[in-house]
Each structure stands twice: as structure tokens, then as C-alpha cells.
Amino acid sequence: MASTSSQPQQINVTDLDLPQLADVRRQLEEELSHLSNSFAQLRQAQAKFRACIDNVGQVKPENKDKTILVPLTNSLYVPGKLSDHENVIVDVGTGYYVKKSRAQAAKHYESKVEYIRTNLEALQETIQKKQDNMNYLVNVMQMKLQEQAGKTAKA
Image 1 (cartoon, one colour):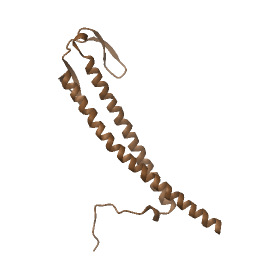
Image 2 (cartoon, helix red, strand yellow; image 1 turned 90 degrees about the vertical axis):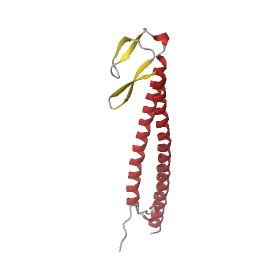
Image 3 (cartoon, helix red, strand yellow; image 1 turned 90 degrees about the horizontal axis):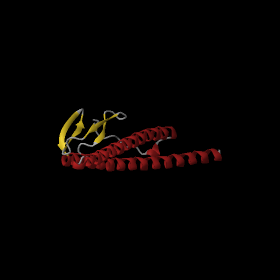
Image 4 (cartoon, one colour; image 1 turned 180 degrees about the vertical axis):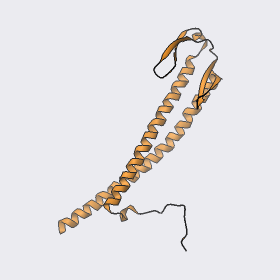
């Protein structure tokens, strides 16, 4: 009676032929590309949250009633005046905004930066493991190519 297992069956890559190794290599390259893109996007998000911390820092009593540029979109700003230097409106995601004190807002964004930092570290480890797997796979492919070249040279 065959048992079913949720664990994927492990295959020794040295047992695969060159076309199979090439397929595994393509799959690893796709995974590495996807992980690297995710890493870059997380870094961008982290930079945006850091910019938010800086922006909250600019909301201070000495800037009350000064004219500032208020962003309506990423590329459209309109002049406005800072009337409340104690509170800011924070985008908490999915189109929801919450009024917070400057300290609460800074803490909110700092926690976001920290959360992304831990995810970046985990993702970096995964990328490194995939890169190590890729390097091992390339070495196996080179070894198999040399074996084939040696066999054809003898024939």
C-alpha cells in the first residue's frame, strides 16, 4: 500500500540529465528574479515609510500657518497652510485614514519600517539559499558537460 505524503520528494540533481538540469535552472532563475523584485519593492516601501517619518518631523509649532505644498497625487501639489501642528492624517491602508498625534504617527511609521526590515532579512536569507542552489546546479551542469566532452573526445 502506497503512503501519501505532503512532503515533496527530493531528487538528487546529479541524477538528472542536462535538459532536466536546464529546466531546473530556468525555474531557479525565475524564482530568483521574482524574489529579487519583491526585495526591491520592499526596499521602496521602507524608503517611503522613512520619508513619512521625516514628513511628520516637519509638522512642528514653528511651521504653523506657513505655506506648504500639499500633495494631491504623486505629481500634483497645491499650496496650503499648516493649521494643526499637533496632529496629522495617517494612511493606514486600503483607503483608510486616521488622525494621529505627531508622536503616534512617527511610532506607526517606525513600526512599519521595522516590520519591513525583518521581512527583508528573511527574504535576503531565502535569496541567498536560492543563489547557493543555483551555484551548485551550475557546477553540476558544468561537470556533466565536461563528462560529455570527455566521452565524445574518446570516441
